[in-house]
Length: 332
Image 1 (cartoon, rainbow, N blue to C red):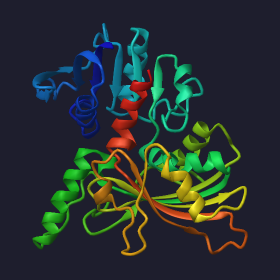
Image 2 (cartoon, helix red, strand yellow; image 1 turned 180 degrees about the horizontal axis):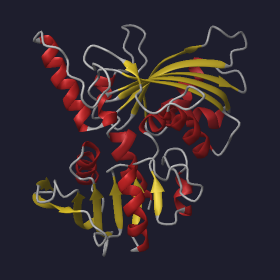
Image 3 (cartoon, rainbow, N blue to C red; image 1 turned 90 degrees about the vertical axis):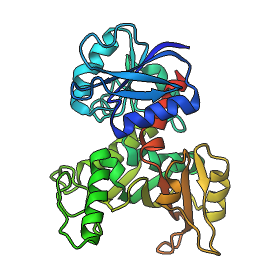
C-alpha cells in the first residue's frame, strides 16, 4: 500500500490516462495528489467518486509522497525528479530525460521486470513506439535470438499529446468545410496527410524518435548485438500507433511457430485472420491494454526461413505510456 501517489502533468493526455488506470486497476494508495503547472492549478478532476484539486508543482510537492508518475516533459523531469527522489519518492518517468542514463532502469514489465530492483529513485518509461514494438518481439527473441529488425511506424496524434489530437480534429473539420488547414503544433497539414516524424535529425539522417527505438531496445534487451533500423511517420490517426516489423532470426522459424510463441505471451493479442482479412488496426487497439499482432508471414525475400514479417497496433496512451508506468508501480 502506498501512503501517497502523485501524478505530475495530471491534466495532460497521458496524465489523465494515468488517473483512469489508477482507478481501473485499483493501485493501492491511501491518497492521490495531482500536480501540474500554475495555469492548471485549481482545476478539479474526478477520481474514485471524489473530486481532486490540481496543485501547482513546486520544490516541496513531494514531501510525504511515496510514488510519483511524471508525464510533463523532459525539462520538468530533469528539474523535479531528483528533488522527488531526494525526498524519498520513487519516480516513474514518462519522458526521455533519464532513459539512456546508465544508472536509471528502463523497464517494460513484460520484458525486463527484474531491472526495477536496480533503481536509485527513478525508473524510466521507454518511448511509446519502443514499448509497443518490444512487447511482441521480446518473447520471440527469447525463443530464437533476433539478429536484425527493420521497423516502420505509423504514429497517431496521441503521441504528441492532447494539443496534437485537437489540431488533427480541427484541421479535419476545416478541410471538410473547404477551408485551408492551419498547422500550429505540427509543421505540416496533418489532416488527410502523413509526414516523417518531426523530431530532430541526427547527422546519420535518422531522427530522434527512430534512434530512441534503436537505443532503448538494446538497453532493455541487454545486448548491442541486435541491428535495428527504424522509419517513423506521423499519420492522421487520433489514437494508437501501428508498426510494420521485419525480423531476422538466428535460426529458421515459421509463422506457425511465431503464432505459438505469441499465443501465450503477456500483453499480446493475435489478430491474424486471413479470411476475412482482419488484422491489427489502430481503431481496435484504442482503449486496449494488449498489443495487437497480425500479418504474420514468412519473409519471401530470404531463402533461409530466418525472416518474419508482422504488423502490430497498440494504444500509445495506455501500453505506450500510462499503463506501462502503472505496471512498473505494480512491480514495486
